[in-house]
Amino acid sequence: MKILVVGSGGREHALSWKLAQSERIQTVFVAPGNGGTALDARLVNVEITDPAALADFVVAENVALTLVGPEAPLAAGIVNLFRARGLKIFGPTREAAQLESSKDFAKAFMQRHGIPTAKYQSFSDAAQAHAYVDANGAPIVIKADGLAAGKGVVVAMTLEEAHAAVDHMLSDNAFGDAGARIVIEEFLAGEEASFIVMCDGKNVLPLATSQDHKRLKDHDEGPNTGGMGAYSPAPIVTPSMHARVMREIINPTIQGMAKDGIVFTGFLYAGLMIDSEGNPRTLEFNCRMGDPETQPIMARLKSDFVTVLEHACNGALDTVELEWDRRTAVGVVMAAAGYPDSPRKGDVIDGIPAETPECVTFHAGTQLVAGSLQTNGGRVLCVVGLGDSVKMAQKQAYETVEKVHFNGAQYRRDIGWRGVK
Ligand code: AMP
Ligand code: GLY
Image (tube, rainbow, N blue to C red):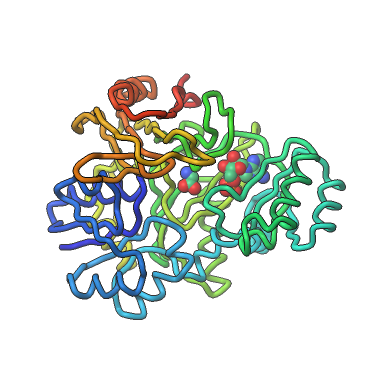
């Protein structure tokens, strides 16, 4: 069987790496892929990004199933387009993807269906937004409504920062249409976790839990990034917390979408904030797998992912039981010089060791230039180590990280710290 994975990040490398392990796979195409998917003999990069051209490719190559990694093609309606042509694809429709593509939609949805989240209000008028900030005080959180590649959220610790963020988004038009409307919400304190499930329109199948590290530097300092590392499982999501999140957040979301006339298919990722009393609230929804959460999650998945995806496309997730490696996986992101503001491209990467049962390196912003592997984006690699404890998994990952070299590499030395007792 042939499968197509859409995207070019570390998430897509990990997904296609896992799919290619299936005995049932003939070829995994990755569009457009990266240097790592180019180097993997079992994967084939395809230089197509336009959804209609991808659908043509799928028909011509007789691809059985398409899996979409990033949010942008989902928000643009790639699932609608494929389905209209009778092609199997796993992901949310354009309508369902609004849970991620519009924060205003997601907040109104959560309020309407009683899903726990931060108190908020939406604005397109700057004067009203400033007045709301003054009335509510800091800390306070300002979010661009639309997709802003992870840069549209400002957690303002002072009124000054909050007003500046409002001006930046509404008056300076920093995010274009994506920031023409903003959400201002209550600051929530606590510990974050990533809760990701697969939905087939009827059934929900939770994946292993994980925790991301959004800040650039150790001890959660420095600017926000797309994610500097993740580990799985996340100890904060105990079995009782898991049950509570399913009951209070995931199931009401799927059911609420159905009530609103939208069938949800695809990955649903609830970004949670769990407060000191153990109450989970939803910070955001994503309609896709997390990056870098996918890398440690896929490293732990033992079940045949091709079969899981087929069941997901056929509305049969209720027949699937996932099997996980009992070990912890720690994924350390190695980022380019200048990340996150202005990542440098073109640095030569060397020293990536061959995969072992304890460690695998997924590529993100890399490309092959005349046989030489070079940096080609902000997050360059994600090195995933596996071990019987967080500490042992960290040891595996960091031993490899230290062998890999490119000029200006930045990485955190504390990925998984919350999981170390
Ligand atoms: P989002 O893209 O909505 O997940 O926001 C990015 C990051 O900003 C989250 O992972 C949190 O670390 C932080 N954040 C977002 N909303 C809030 C909030 N209401 N309170 C505190 N931190 C938040
Ligand atoms: N790691 C956060 C995200 O994928 O949005």
